[in-house]
Length: 254
Image (cartoon, rainbow, N blue to C red; front, side):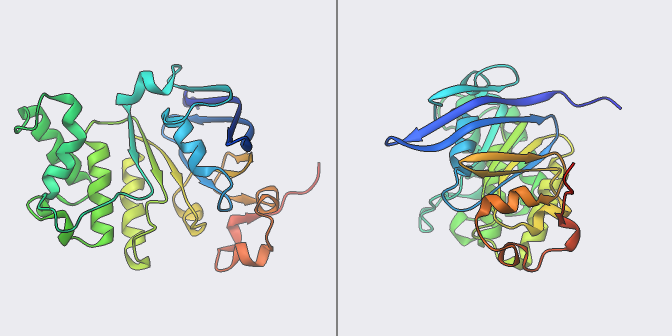
């Protein structure tokens, strides 16, 4: 079996903010078409690590390579759905126009773009089952529907890696499964890296887990290990509440 090529390589990364250490000794490799969840306690550095991968922040020390280059050199090959997308619900912008914004760097001016742009917008909306809502104002949608639109905006440039920061924060439990089903389908062709607090997701969707709490503990499978639990600095009962037993694997000492 051929091992997928690495698409994200982080080596000996350190990052601090206002003189305080946020991330230390981070080594991480994510391979093509992986679905990696970044988990960990609030303030542990998950979002910071995501932004370092995107090139939105620069490390104090160490290297971040995406497709063997710096993140900024391959920015067009990356898609990003941030934690909070501010929406003025009274602003009269349609779903289609929001997704077209993801193509702005591909053509000059607003106008209508080329046929290629219009086709890319349609395909992106179809991928997230939102094409029928293309003429709706963004403020008329539910939280889950808006998140689908924001993913479509990121997909409009045909990214090879999709980064998402807690994308289900504004989605009710009922629609979270549908949301992750979409990500699972996208993962057939796109590498997915997601910051996630919902550990239930791990058992059904992701392929690898990285627990971030200043340092990192990576596991190349969809399970939460004892080492990861220790990084949370909280009782196991609190972390594991409601989780399928198979997610929590106990490792014997070798």
